[in-house]
Image (cartoon, rainbow, N blue to C red; front, side, top):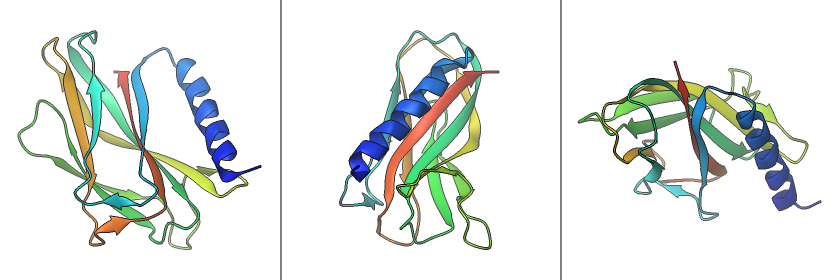
Length: 152
């Protein structure tokens, strides 16, 4: 099977598990270009106005290949209710170089970590923005970035 088919299977499985979680109100992954994730490439997550006003738990998800050359990833995340972004430092591999997320036989991995609380204050469309702040201008081997929002 091709790597593309394995990726589709992984995405399908992740989506299936998401629907089983009743408190999840938003869960979406955006693909990264095959040319890499440039520091200037901001990933946008658009939430519709159907959310109830309140505080929500947030997770950030990273999908990457076995070829990702670092054990960590630095991100900035800007929630709609904040003036400045939060910085998130993700350790997607341990000190020995073993991936901390779940993987597939085809070399794709998924890692999820807690992100700042999402405070939804008015019933209007909201945008969450995510970009990397690594020293490297373009990150290769990151395939998707995701956000999961759940009721507290």
